[in-house]
Length: 626
Image (tube, rainbow, N blue to C red):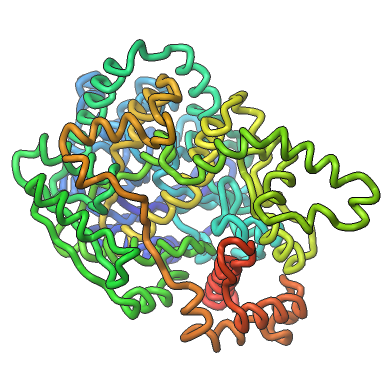
């Protein structure tokens, strides 16, 4: 795990400036750093840099930037190629000097060209310059585990794992993209390919960005919609076969992710996904696995006791830490430094805390991320199934409410909140993205200028009639990389540890598309097949319970210790100087929120998430802009 940055530019910068860019990511790679600038044709200079967190081949033979044996290629790379040993066997003709996977990428490119990335199983962000072709390739793994940004500045390009190096590049203007802020306030993150700055983008999951002669071209080597439809044509014959095969694939995935020259552990929440990953790790490991969990004093949020019971049953070396509200609150200040783009999923706070706990002992941790999206685990999927059943009734209700007499009376707005949600769900491109109208109304007034849509109007491309299956595909493409994986990457990198996700192995993901939906969701049972595999390792009574998740008391914080800061951030004078928000409305909205707080789930007026997203944006703005 590392951080990379660099440029291909006709604007000359010094090696010291490149080092300064690189060192903004010290936390991503404290073990080593490397920077190199060399001349290219057309008046261009190419700069590549890397901060290294040593995982495989801890010697200096793994130093980057790394050149190919013929000096044709130079690479800066972040991530892990888990099948690098198998690929190395196919590439025996290459004169390898190290035992690391970086060199395998160079050898693979020389043999297969950029199409070599289709052979890689892993998580990666790659910057590879081909001197012969005079081309820079930026490549991101299939599901977006590793981040990669780029800034197109005329005929120049600057790239980095995080925004901080790009912000450090001489002359970067820091012009905010106002059109993405509405969606950010609603979704709580800025999804690919967008970024918070103008002309800055994220390389999308499964995408290759090619920069040649000042021009960019892009293509997807792995696309969720197309892969889903291809694999769906190869359904698994029976549930018994599916369970046996998926179990074997998961075991292989976990085993590969335990290959490291540093200590490996696992996050263990006590839920199905992390428990299953830990159980398999314990099975394939030669020694007891180290596991980590955090607990909360408030019982309704506390899963530590369940994690402890699972750890005891499996025989892991378990460490838990009970955290109080102050421990969580103390993390708030560090959010803009490590999430250097506005990011408001508050579970980032306990995620940072559990990463800090694990970092005391290990450099690599396994996590259960991906189980919910690929095997139908979120509670929203129950709601989506219900919404599909009520869709005809909802459309009829909406139609009636549009008759002039009823419209004049505002009948739709007078209906119960849940009825409004179903009746208002009439956009064919966002059918599974139910609800949110109350928040959108507020955000529209906070930012009256037009922007990218709140929701993702892309559902028709999945060509999937089952709303649950369609929403899962949407979450895999948007929520998973934009929120979950971003959260885990930044939280783990804060403490210089690498998080690996066996369920997001390409073989697991593609196999999940071959499974009939009933293998994932049946009679209200979510993650059916994953649960049945988990029961082979862990008794049901240790796992079967309602989903909890991390809880952060946002309403209490913002109306308590953060109140003064929030009031200062929404003063009319400050907002007018900032020039982004409707100053008077935002001031009035935040003032009213501070007076009344959240009003319960049935009202639709629980504004702490919007207020928190606004707070995080302003905190970020004050850190990096003014």
